[in-house]
Amino acid sequence: MIAKASGGKLPEPGTFSETDRTILAAADAMIGTTREYMKTQQLHQVLNCVWAVVADANRYFASEAPWALAKTDPTRQGTVLYVTADVLRQVAVLAQPFVPASASKLLDLLAIGPEERSFDALTPTKRIKAGVALPSPVPVFPRFVETEDKS
Image (cartoon, rainbow, N blue to C red; front, side, top):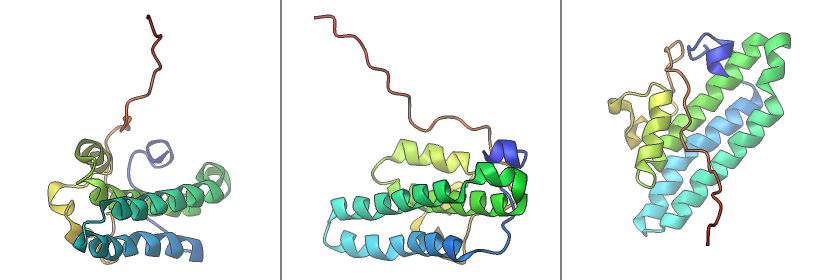
């Protein structure tokens, strides 16, 4: 959607709404929560925390409907796309230990350099950079195709 809506560049966000601030705060909180779980090697809880934010981001994206905002409020659309991209950046950084290849693909799609892929980059003061040219979108996960059982 970013490729189509803003010529492949991450849009500059407008003023964040309460909904934007809420999803960003949930993403920002993941690093602290996951560090606590890692102290006791509760890997399943780390993933539960990350996937809960993914579910919240999915609801955020669906409720904000950036595809409809393209015609009515392009500035707001840009903000929604920016916020979603930053949440996905944080998810991908935290998912790296569990799904390194897929997380790396997602970070590549967001034009996140190697120096920005560490947990130190997960602070509210280090958001994704607006205006950065993003590569052409490609699938992160291969499409599942069920094969016929020939037995």
